[in-house]
Image (cartoon, rainbow, N blue to C red):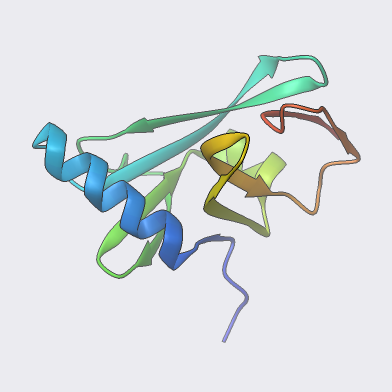
Length: 110
């Protein structure tokens, strides 16, 4: 059995399902990596209508996380979680490839 390329935690899956239900969309979260942010790259999340043919797909509790091949190279081995704390609530990527990040937690460098 091979290691998963990316993981969606149960907490994140519950949140995606909740958002998707309210927007009457499929429970599919797309994670993409864009250039920019204060550390070089930034994570971008959005609901997707369906996976693309070359997407990597991870599934947890019936909710799918999809990542395009270029973004996957930067987030391979990561876990996508949903956290709530005094600073607010957000999806959080624990990325073993990131050499540094920023205070906001939404950008990183490799």
